[in-house]
Image (cartoon, rainbow, N blue to C red):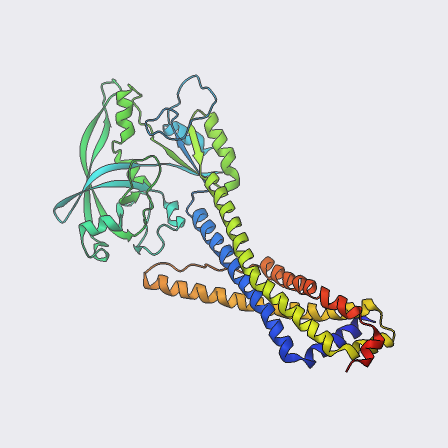
Length: 436
């Protein structure tokens, strides 16, 4: 029997019991829809987490610190160096010249007293590079981002802004002053420095709800953010300055830590190794990324297993439909065999019918699963909008999921048709023709 004739006969048979076959196909569609909807949530959440973390710059960043430090940071490289290297401006320039390095900037944080409306407010100032605007931490902020690295502007963290005024939005455009201790080098050649109180006027340009300067090193979260260029120009005394004095360290300023941004995550390991060879401590967060990927792989597996239960129930419907079709079409099967149809032709006929139901049910299920995912995304974004939070995509249906779901539905349907097809092929044509 030709494939064309077999397909036409299978479609005609499906049309004869259209209501029952439609219900069976709908069962397959519901099973596939649950599979697609759950896996699309797993894929969407994985992409959301990965994009957010990648956009934040955590995974393409290497944190550099002196080998000898008081912060209890990560262990230094095992290679022995003749002398401890200073993490100073020369070291920063050397690191910035490494291949695939985009930028190297110090993490500047220092305690200060902010004066607003004639009242003092203790806080911590943090210098932020202009590249941090792309990290996603400033999405949805009230106001604007820094206009340049040298602008006398400030962005307030929401909790600190509430201390200044209950009307946080009304702070944008106003001015505050910060009082800090400036490090000034002594001119007597002793290598020491003096601490001079200074004051700087800053214009408030924005209020952000996140903590983009939570940073590294345990110096506290920055609640008053200023451009990194301004932070460096202030020459504010920091914790590592006092540490250098106690240790009898160098006269020139050193950095407590540096942040190195790579072109991509693929370059992080090479940069980290190169920095360690220079005699500094270095680490990245790629290990956390690997653990995150393992977590989502397990999550996708569990979601897929639970969703497959609905598809397993649908296979029972296919078996039931085809077995009933055998009882109703015994005479037709007998006629086919009497006309010369082989057992394999009868098997293929039922396989084609099962495959058609699986294919149609797979397509309908993918569409239904996509609609469920979109509905969940829309509902989630409505809730986030009411909370003044940015919208997100929690569901994603990539092409590989579409093709896999349809293929899986067809394969499961063909497996479900094994028993009915084998039973139909074993019918005795004489007994089948006598069946009423």
